[in-house]
Image (cartoon, rainbow, N blue to C red; front, side):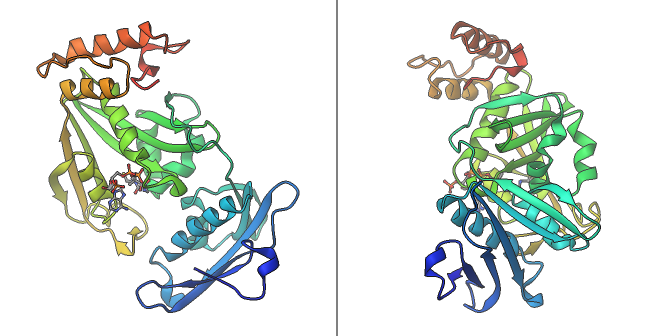
Length: 322
Ligand SMILES: CC(C)(COP(=O)(O)OP(=O)(O)OC[C@H]1O[C@@H](n2cnc3c(N)ncnc32)[C@H](O)[C@@H]1OP(=O)(O)O)[C@@H](O)C(=O)NCCC(=O)NCCS
């Protein structure tokens, strides 16, 4: 994005031209309607030429604008869109905005920027799970699909309750198989290792009960490399598994997702024990590679108990990095 001219007094809360990196062509604009008000609120607007729509560029531009707003000291970003503009509503939801008001014509959104970005504690949330819908929609764009697994799944939340850094929903498929149904990291915190950390936590949470962790995802240039980096390997492909399931085209990084790809990771409890070591709870301990899973889970609980990390939480709320 390139900043507009003649607005030096309002920097960085000014107008930006959006250019396509590959061609250098101007494809739209984004801007703030002035600097933050006394409550730290700035209002964002954006638009793309029709030929550049549907490629994820608006989402990228809004994420960029949120970073600019945060760096510039804004606390809240507001934006509104007409009620029938599904694409724009989607962009705002995907980038972390929540609906705060609506009229017959418009929906008004806000996103809070000022949470502690270093708050990476992970909790299991059992009540009012839908309050994290915003983040969940990042990984699964259709709310009725999320409704299909949210209740019966375990919801792990990293970070502040009101402004989570990342979420993950996992279901127990039986016979030691657990499935990642949803994993999403706040757009401005992606590529900071949080996704990987949350997955490691999930593995250690089920230690002793888990044999395989599986995930079904679109054949996307973002998610597949991510899961591979986390130790997953290709398992099988369901042709048109995405295209035939969702009621609208799912586009990620400019690619329309058609097939569903399943990846699998066999979870070795002894390796999880390594992770516990790395996290400092048992520093210096020699790890037995053939450690029995059941023993590991008891030790894991016992160590949390000993270090007093449990507070009032039940066993299942306790994690190795609590
Ligand atoms: C996919 C997602 C969960 C990854 O979380 P993250 O915190 O950004 O990823 P991490 O920082 O832990 O990445 C770990 C490694 O995965 C790989 N990776 C992550 N994002 C990648 C990307 N966009 N392109 C290529 N590789 C990527 C890298 O190897 C990365 O290590 P590196 O940064 O040292 O190179 C996150 O991008 C996200 O929330 N996306 C939107 C929702 C979604 O698509 N969820 C998955 C559907 S189930």
